[in-house]
Amino acid sequence: MSTSPADPARYNSFVGDLLGVLAYGELSAFERLSSDARYAPTLHERAVLGRIAVIEFQHYEQVSARLDDMGRDPEVAMLPFQPSVDHFHQRTRPADWFEALMKAYVIDTVSADFYRAVAGYVDTPTRELAERIQADKEVTSLLRDRLTAALADDPRLASRLALWARRLLGEVLAQARRVSFEHAFLSGLAGLDGEPFRELVRELTAQLAASHSLRMTQLGLAG
Amino acid sequence: MSTSPADPARYNSFVGDLLGVLAYGELSAFERLSSDARYAPTLHERAVLGRIAVIEFQHYEQVSARLDDMGRDPEVAMLPFQPSVDHFHQRTRPADWFEALMKAYVIDTVSADFYRAVAGYVDTPTRELAERIQADKEVTSLLRDRLTAALADDPRLASRLALWARRLLGEVLAQARRVSFEHAFLSGLAGLDGEPFRELVRELTAQLAASHSLRMTQLGLAG
Image (tube, rainbow over all chains, first blue to last red; front, side, top):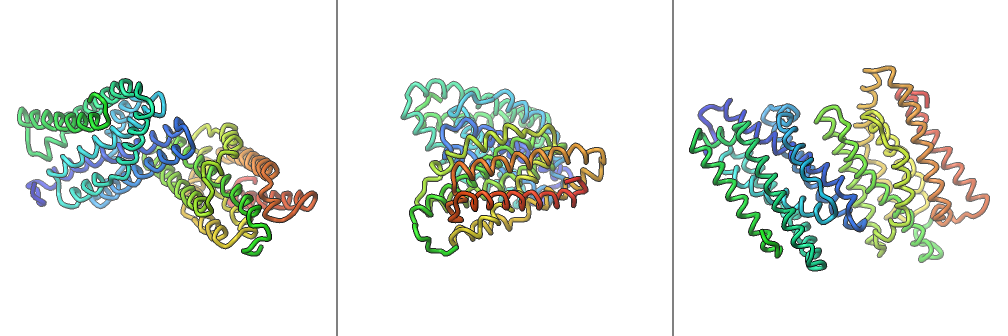
């Protein structure tokens, strides 16, 4: 992808959509994680989930600042994606602390993979933003360490969390597919249409699912 | 107050209690504000309340780090205050966006006054921490501007918010009195007992109420 697209207005509109869904995803992740903190078994763990929520908020601020730089109103860019992101959260309410941790982990890691995948199609400032956010490994390791410890403490947790993680991944991918097709930003960025575009979405989906599966295996779960 | 108290162990225990209630107050303010963000009329406003919540979380982290420096476990220091802070939030659930804004404003400003008042009784590092947190005016002006705008848009809002603010202040002071008497950190820090101590609490309460009243008048509300 060159840094000077053939049709800058069209390109900006695609990138604006992409950043809009990412911004709203981060903002709502922040709110859900802060509210899931109530499941934490100790005040220390509550603060850890709070810290993770704050990092998501800082990502939101970075994406939102990039929209401002592009002359796009973040509110206008986010609004079209609100229903599907909210729908995702309604369908994936955690029932306890471990489900909340796993949800945070799946959102964090699958979004990082998604940021990495789209970074190849965008202009330099947007790519640098995507890489900066994706490279933020503090959250990932905080969550992974906690899940590993919880699974070591209670082996029976594994089958329940494996099932839950599979459901989360299904919902994430369904949402990613829905917003990609409805809003066509992926097709716009990749300059593809019709079957080649559907092929790209299939590839990306398979990639995200494979990386997720590897992470679940590393946690000792059937991915 | 000297920086080398007569009985360091006793003094540390009082300061630990004080920082414990402040830490839990900030942590729970963070969670409540993030969750109240759902009342926001626009995504932009939701992000503003999110930003305020994040600042409360950063205060929590500063207080918690000070406890660590003192060799006190933040969890242990916070736990005794959890029931009364949670009770306060249960009794003051905002019914809409404007009540959420006002609650955030009252908590923010009255706590700043409280930090300022106790700063006179503590050692240098603790006083510097209290001053740093109290001096953070970003939240205060974000909230005041929004309340001012809302009241200008809808004059009928004034009487409802005046009533709500009075109730909030009453609950804040009742809580402050309860934790001060139960945990005796104010008496410990001020080196007072019996009637002189009760007098100090009365004075502090009157001071907090007077400053609150002034701020409400400045918003155009009957304080």
